[in-house]
Length: 304
Picture 1 (cartoon, rainbow, N blue to C red):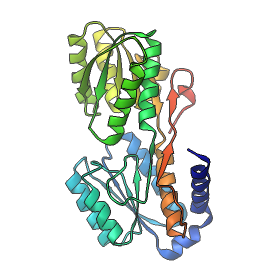
Picture 2: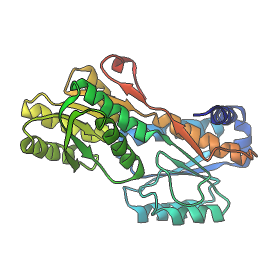
Picture 3: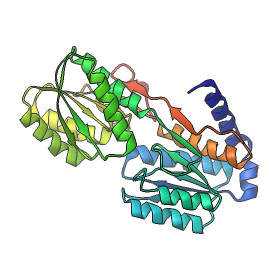
Picture 4: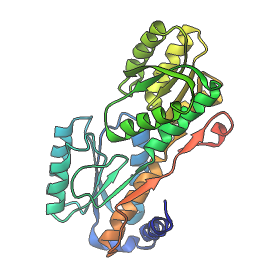
């Protein structure tokens, strides 16, 4: 984040605590639509939003799209009928939600995309450095393998953050002459799906030495498959979920996760929206949130 973005972000964050009375006077109403809520990552994000809204005396409307873009658009329509002031949008399909963004802007609603960007006239996008996260995890994996061996990628739903993680991972793996990417399969970021997918990977590639999962949910299924195989296969991932961090602390095949900060993302997203609502004329179009490697050295001290 450059100095200008840092300054604006800090100012907007200060506004969320300095001006709660204004929120109460205005009857501020915030809507947030999540791509899914069956994920500790988004549950944590919602908790932070509820806490911030409570400090502002604002009303919050939250919906779960369940990875259904038609439902997400319908949810936004319902929120607009309830006269929300701010829409925090975590899109299940970045291109597919453009009509919802357009509808919101036509009604004068401030729109901030969180975690994944959305097509259309979004005011600000706040999200993790997903390419960097994938890069860091796969660089860690390559180094843990001593720069050689067969590896596979446990892919996920093709939304922009996942695509960026895979892109970053491949870029890191390309830096190791002795690393060979032998398989890429979709575990749909789901533990039970990933378990079966990784069992097949291990059977198909008896010399498999490492796996990168695009999220911790899939990684937990991958870990179970690795443990069931009895093989020495190292596993890295992205997210920083509590369950994953514990597994890393416990010395399992899960050796690293590049942590994101869902609470910070929604706090900064809300701050950007409030800054604009309260008169800021220059608000960043994008605010990238840093990521952090979590391994056995620092897992005990890490939490969302």
